[in-house]
Image (tube, rainbow, N blue to C red):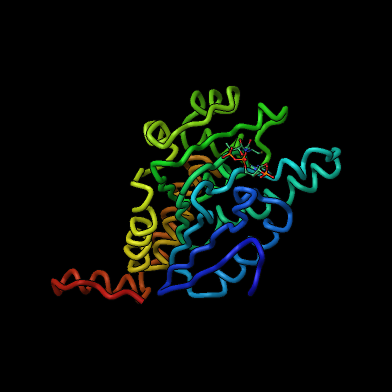
Length: 257
Ligand code: COA
């Protein structure tokens, strides 16, 4: 597949999708959202055990939704843009394998929301994140009002959304907005090592773990615990369960499917 604003690289179970519109700091216009959607199709069609999402160029992960495009939108166009953004970002959230956001620079507005939809966030020390919409006269519209508080807690989310603060990597780490901060030139190799380690784990069990952990945000404790019991027992009899436990008993490293 060939897109102008997104690239996809697949290597040994690790698929990397790069938002590639550096002259606009990788801002997500409709064309880029559509390309990302198709790239996610492609990533699902491949044997993707881990998905990495990042931005092209030296400056930005994704600087947000496209402000030039939004400037003259009316309510109807805004509804359509919100639908599109939500649909694509939800696909990242529910992607059937772990997703790592390699936050290599600015991640504002829709860029921060894209990172929030990943399972894990690794930031370059140059990263700056924020839900900055308030200073454009709007609010986060691609999931930020919901996913941010679930990640960093209500007080921090309210502060970030109300003040539109731009949070540097160190503060993002302190707030729990990202899980690691690494030197800018180490980001790719750090994320690749992390992805390779995850890619070697049993894929179906990992997917099950992701879906079970997601229940924390989707249901109540009782239903979540019921869900866990069901999927836990459903893993017994899989090739990876047999291999994992046999390898332990035989005192050797497991080799998963
Ligand atoms: N939408 C559309 N275009 C954007 C954009 C966005 N979200 N973010 C940056 N751009 C464009 C700029 O307009 C500029 O275009 P130009 O070269 O035609 O002037 C180009 O990308 C480079 O950005 P610039 O502002 O010149 O770079 P900078 O290094 O001085 O500042 C930022 C970088 C990220 C701090 C600044 O661009 C910014 O604040 N962007 C908006 C972030 C935001 O509020 N996002 C939330 C949107 S919901």
